Length: 127
Image (cartoon, rainbow, N blue to C red; front, side, top):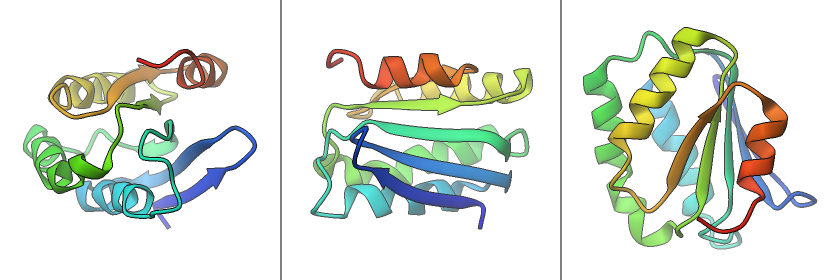
């Protein structure tokens, strides 16, 4: 499965683990799993762990489409944080592109290449 979703009750965050080649529809489906679940806090911090993923196949138009398809979820999203965790420079660049495209969403998105830094930012004071 390219996107595995779980909620860590101890940390109070949602984690999406991405593996293999990632496509926009998979990302939007993962967002739906979290934000359409009434048992989750809409401001839940979200970690997109893409260290095992290949994101460089995503085109800019597909990223724009991902942001547009997530728009119906905006009323259910709180003003929380979403961290994208990557392991390669090319994926860092793709994450920054997504960060820029998602600037108008309710979530604050930041890209990291260090797991501890990503968690510290997610669990820090509200944005």
